[in-house]
Length: 526
Image (spheres, rainbow, N blue to C red):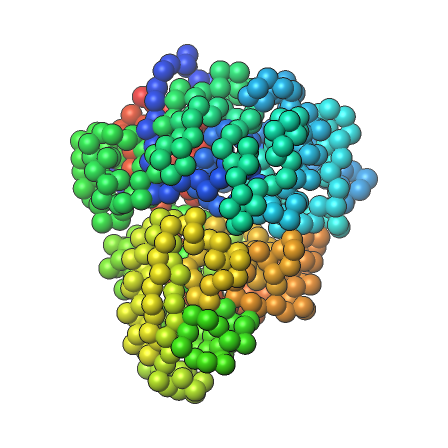
C-alpha cells in the first residue's frame, strides 16, 4: 500500500507561489462545521473550516511548528514575566476592507472569555489584554505563563466594528440553539472569503485576492467547495468517481481500494487525538441505568471493570482494520505528560472484570445507555457497537444511541449523558489542555467538557497552578501526579489513538496534519 507519511518541513511549505490560477478544490468529510462563530465551539472540524477564513495570532504547520500569522513575533516582557508582548502584522485587512489593529485583538480576547464561549479554558490565565498602540498588544496573565502561545492557535480574531454593527458581540449560545449573524457569516482576515453557506449541505469559499500572505503561501486553490457526506460508502464513491479531490475521514475498509485507483493516493499519519468513553460518576443516581437509588458508575471498581472488558486490540484489527493505536490514557503520544508506561495500563481481563463487578455488588450487572456520535470520529459508531458486545460479557447491557455530533456534543456539555464517547485532540501539545477541559471540576470558565462529575478541590488547584509554574521540572512532576489520579480513579475508558488517512487526487499537494486541520493556503494543485 503506497501510504505516505507527513515529513514535509516548514521551509518546503512557505515557498513563494507561482502566478495564481483558477483551481477548485472539491473537499469532503463526514461532518460539517457546527457553527462559523469563532468562539462558540472548540471542535476540530469546526476550527478547520474557520481556519480558511479567520485567523489567530499564530498557527501551526503540518510539522507542529509555529507559523507567525496575525502576530509577527511574541515574547515575555523583559521587565515583567506576567506579560507577553505580541507585535502585530501591519497592513492586514478584513474581508470587508477594514484595517486589522490591536483594538480587534483586545475585543476578540474579551469576547472569547464570555460564558458562552467554548474557548475560555484556553485563556483562563489571562487577566487583561491591552493595546499599547495599533500594532502592539500586551497580554497579562495571572502569574507567568510559559506556554501561552500554544493556547492561541485556534483563537480567531474578529473585526470589532463588523461584530458590533451586526449585533453579534455576544458569543452564540450554541447549546441553546441560538442563531446569530456570526453563525452563518464571516468577516475575517483569512486567505478565503465566504461565498455561500448551507449548513450540512455545502460551503463555498473563494480566494481572498487581497490576502496579506498571497505571495507568501502557495494559494493555488481559487475556490473551495466543501461538502459534508456522512455516509462512508457515499464518500468513497464520490472520491472514486472524481466528484471530490480531497477526502478526510477516509473509511478504513476502503483504504486499499482508493489507494489502488488510478489518479488517487492515500496519505497517512498518526493523529494528535484519543478516543475514549466518559462515565458520570458524580451523580448519586443516574437516569440511563436500571438501578434505582444508586449509581453503579460511582464505584471505581465498576469503572475499572468496564475498561477491562474492552478489547482494544480487537477493535484495532476488526473495526479499525489496523488503523489505530490502543490507548491506556487519554493523552496522545505527542503531548507533554504522556508516558509509554501509563499508555500501556489498559488491558483486557474478562474474568478479572467479572470479579470486580461482583465485589462492587453488581454480579448480575446493570443496563445503561451509551451516547455515541456517528459523524465525528473514524468509525465512531462501529467502535460503540463493538463496545456493546464487549461490555455484555461482564453483565453490562448497553443500549446504544448514536446521533450526529451536533446533537451528541451538547449532551456532554449540558451534563445530560451518563455514558458517552468523546475524542480529544491537544493543539497545545501539553497536558494542561486535557486537564482544563476534562479533569478539572466543572465551573463557569473551566471543565466544560468534563461530563464525569469528578471534582476534587486539591486537584483543581494543582491543575490551575500549571499555567503559572515556570519551574518545568516541578511542573512536569505535577502533571505526572495529576495523571496518576486520573488513571487510578479510572475517570475515562481510553480506547485508542486515531490514525489519519487522507485521500486525494494525485494533483493535490499537501501532507497530513496531525491536528487533522488542513489549511488550504498551503495546498498546491499540480
